Every structure is written in C-alpha cells, then in structure tokens.
Figure 1 (spheres, one colour):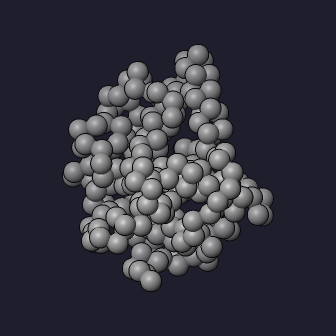
Figure 2: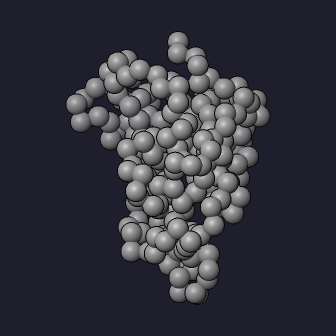
Figure 3: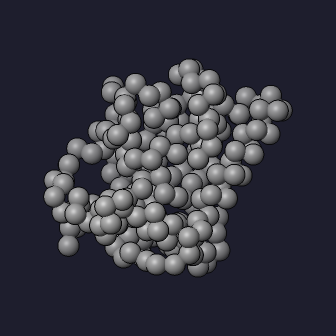
Length: 206
C-alpha cells in the first residue's frame, strides 16, 4: 500500500463520512493467478492523490485519508490501537456478512462493472490472498471486503485479509464485533438484513 503517513492526520483534516462497509465471506479456497486488481487500484489511487496535491485541491487530504484508511490490514480494525487516528477517520454506519455467490449483482452495481466482471475481479483477489497464505502452512480462508460510501471511490479488495482454518475453529464468536469498528463514543454500525438479493449469513456457521 502507498505510504501516506506523511500526510497531515489532524482530526479536522476531513469531515467524518457515513461509510457503509459490507463484509463478504467466501467458502471455497481457489487456486490460480497471483495477480490481483487491487494493486492496480493502489497505483491509480496514489496517482490521483499526487495529482490533487499538485493542484492544491481540498479533496487531496480526504483522498489520502481514504486510501490510508482502507489499507489497514486487519478485520474490523480490531488490531489497530484506538490512538491511531487514521483508523477512525471514517465512520462505519452499516456492515454485515454475505455469501459471495449471493452478491455478484450488488458487487457489479457498486463497482460499476459489467455482468460477470465482479466474479472475475473477486477471483483474482482471492487467488492473491490464498497465494500469500499462512506462515504456518495451515489452510487459509480469505475474507475480501467491499467498501463504499458517499464521496469516496468504492473499493473491492483484501482489506480484511483472512483467517486460518485452525484459528477459525478455536476462536469464539464475538457477538459484539461491530462495537470495535468505530472509535469510542461513536455508535457501532448497524446490521444489513438484506443486500439486493443477498441475505445476511452472519449467524450461519455450517
């Protein structure tokens, strides 16, 4: 991810946006290409930030914060210390868990893709996550995420990383996981019962 730490991180740098985040779970571990479209997105986003900075645009800071925020490499920001300002530059208003096979129409609509392109893009992301795998060699379950909101560029990528099958089996379910997504004093995101044709599967553990 581009190094954006040199940008100003004052809380007043950008307005707090209402950003809904949708978490997407995938049940199969694919094999294939090592390339992932999020890398092209990273390059394009960094170029956009630099162009806005050169133009003196007031949107430059918001764009830089957005790229930095979504690059946090931990699910729900639970590993990021609450003192890290960039983890809470944006307020998450809605989040939930859906099966990818139920979400292709929604993904393509949000990302502005043609029919079938959503599956191809996600497959590349999953292949990249699986190829990175787990240092311990355990079976790795990737967790891609779709993030979007008003005034920001939608992002479909590997922000959430993944989890090993072993850890998934022993780690207890935390029913309060949404409370970790925003800073203290800010309401946690609400659940999303339905996303187009996709139904919530948060409590389906089979």
